[in-house]
Image (cartoon, rainbow, N blue to C red; front, side):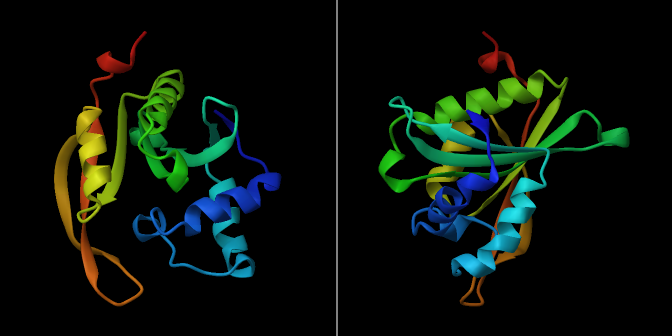
Length: 164
């Protein structure tokens, strides 16, 4: 896991626009010129990481933000995407372990994330990592075809399985 740089634009664009990833990301498919604004948003987050497979090839990305004030103990994972050809090989589980460890190093006590209710693989994945389903936000996510999808709120406060 390494910090993303401006040189990662093409990689991030390819991951974000991949048909297996994009339906569950914030932005609809778009050309590279329009994606510049989304990439700038990703670069402005507290953390924006690039992940490598076992061969050292860049094949995933993720981001997180830290809250402040009374929420200073909370971090939110805002994005997580892995190239289709790298999915299902354990990379996501390893990456989430690295993300949780990095956030624990910042004395975070709660990690939250949101996932669309029709993201079956994602929901199973977060359940398997010990994230708890804490609620449903009705009609929260709107797809490009106009239909709405519920958003599932996940929280993690028990980090025992992530401790070495």
